[in-house]
Amino acid sequence: MKLQKYNPLKPYLLLWGTQSLSALGSAMTGYALILWLYRQSGSALETALLSICSYAPYVLASIFAGALSDGWSKKRTMLVCDLLAALSTVGVLVLLKSGQLAPWHMYLLNALNGLMNTVQQPASDVAATLLVPKEYYQKTSGLRSFSSSLNTILHPVLASALFAFFGMEWVIAVDLLTFAAAFVSLLCFISIPEQPRDSRTREKLLQSVKSGLSWLKANPLILNLILFLAFINLVASAYNAALPAMLLSRENGGETVLGLVNGMVGAASLVGGLIVTLLPAPKDRVRVICGSLMISMSTENFLLAFGRTPWVWCLGAVLGWLAIPLMNANLDVIFRSTIPADIQGRIYSCRNTLQFFTIPVGYFLGGLLVDRVFEPLLAAAPSQGLLVGLFGAGKGSGAAALFFVLGLAGVAVCLVFYPILRRFRWTEPKS
View 1 (cartoon, rainbow, N blue to C red):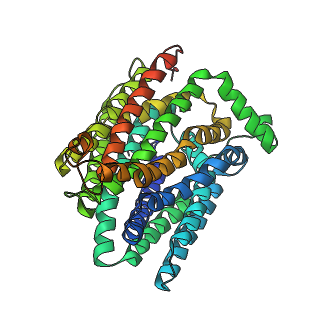
View 2 (view 1 turned 30 degrees about the vertical axis):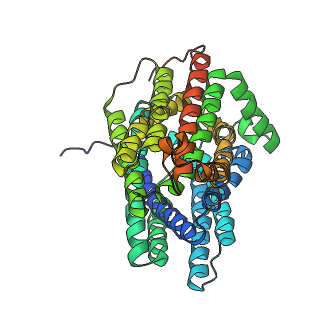
């Protein structure tokens, strides 16, 4: 009688699969809300405020959330946060059915979701570390990139179809069904081991935050990688704020084109994630991170700025996102292999605050610059002038001009940080 070989990744794969399904449902709701609000207002800034309200509490509270998470059950934390986030989605449904849904309701509920994600994220990161053997870090990072990419491909297509044919109620219903599948799976079928609590996990809250920041200060490579990504996130979030404003307004754009470009982002990331799972470990992970981001920053923004057709915009999406899973995988290996598992929650939460505080800033600046600076600038430009020749005329041309500026900014960030990061050496740990 043959004994079945135990798969050490089975618990993680179940968690990854069901949580990815739930993330797809949440992304569909978020995308449908953007379409709903842009139809109502036509403002890039008002639409960007949805993301700002999601990220602001995440950034403000994240530095404390990890310290709390280190002392809490990872499984219970994830279950409670998922449940409260689902209740906020039910709140959107109730307001929508009663005809009372207003932008400020969406901002408030997005803020609640962001707060729940603040507490859940460090618990989820540590749970992955506890469930995955070290030799599988890069491959499981590739799986996360794969699911994230598949999400990016599917959610605009599915959300647009459900929103157009059946309305927002069906989008939310799918979101709640996927939440239920993930919740029951985690509650009944996944056991997450808990780390023994040493003196570091019994520290008071402020002491825990201080110890997390002190650890980062003592590890300059990790700190500088976080700061590098913070500046990249500033550029990327301004890109995210400007993209709907440009593609929904351009002569050759519209909701279908926005979904197509987002789908190509997901397809490129999907291919990149599959490549990551097949590649051997690189000799220099830091160089791979910097090179991947330079490729992204120096291609997509300029093609969006100067392109006039969906195919050029889609090409930009492919070039901009193909290497991102490679960057994420190598960054993930460095972080997970360097940061001790028993304090990862507080380190990751400090990382989240430092690395992601630029995201709401970028969304705000992106929306503000489109509405108040670049669109008026292009509207007032002479029809035969240089600006119109470069970026076109009509609504959406201002957003295209902003993409040109973002391309220059992204390349500059990569050039500044590369020599800084090269000063530090990182050695691959032995299995």
